[in-house]
Image 1: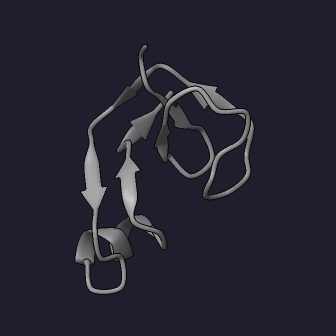
Image 2: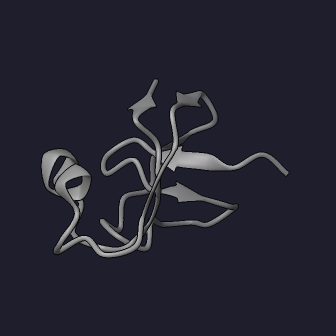
Length: 62
């Protein structure tokens, strides 16, 4: 099964009704780029992307 990305926060998820991060319900199978955040408090990338929770995120979502 293909993973989808939340259109609101870009979290990558597999078949869920709502996003575990932002509780959004709009997902897209068309996304590009992939970043895994392990320690969002110390990560400069997480800070730049405004990511507050660890996990996998898409860089661009259509």
